[in-house]
Image (tube, rainbow, N blue to C red; front, side):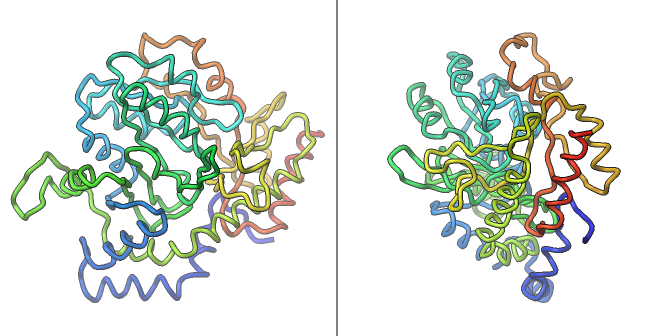
Length: 385
């Protein structure tokens, strides 16, 4: 059995190097390292794939979130509601812009932001909601957009973990994750479902005016060289990373299907074990991880464990050559940087439990049946003593 990796980028690269290498070499030879043809080609191809009018590439996923908020004209003191159970980048940019983060609880079944918690958190100062499509599955965007419309709020989708996933409306219409809100943001960090070989990110929107504003922001506020029309930043996707991403984009659906297949095999092997809850898909069009699943792209395969010493399980897996992760071990509202006297622990019942229960197994496009069988049997042996 080959060595198990949490993310096997080397194995993925070996399958596409004959395409990636010439693309990178082309950039080096023509020396168009910033805003070169490869960036524009990737932008257009991603717009077509997502079915969105505008993709604005940028330097990384954190910048994408920050620039999206800058583009919407949010002001210091404006309140922005987001999920308590996620990576810190989501709340980090809110604080950096001197906006007021308002963290709320998530659902037990899909780990995504809870609708009732959003409604409870809205005040006259609320200006935006940032749903995070955690681990590869969309939040309930239809309900979120209805809440936003009722209260005249912006919606900024954090799509760093769900690129390629579909969201199905109650009428059966399907749209790509990240294209539903007023603006979406994603990361192309190497371990993402669509990852480059460095840092990278992008912003999505169907609003022409917002897209124009954001294009200026990512480039020092310039639309014409040395003419600074808006306050901007330096956040551009370099051409080498765009070349890598453009080579991978046609394979994104097959990459996601490989992840879905691995997830289905994990869940089958672990079904019926009372101390383990496997991931659920909650889309109206999908019951469990079905053969045609398109609503969950499994950036992570995350278990909930009950009555098991998680630290001991982590050590047992590591001792057997199986990497794993705990995403996330501390609720954001308990992080020193984001503590706030307004928060009541009773409002974070689910998150406070999840940080104790979750463990993520290796998940990537190169997982094979032998590895999955070894991982799951190792877990079962630990549970059975």
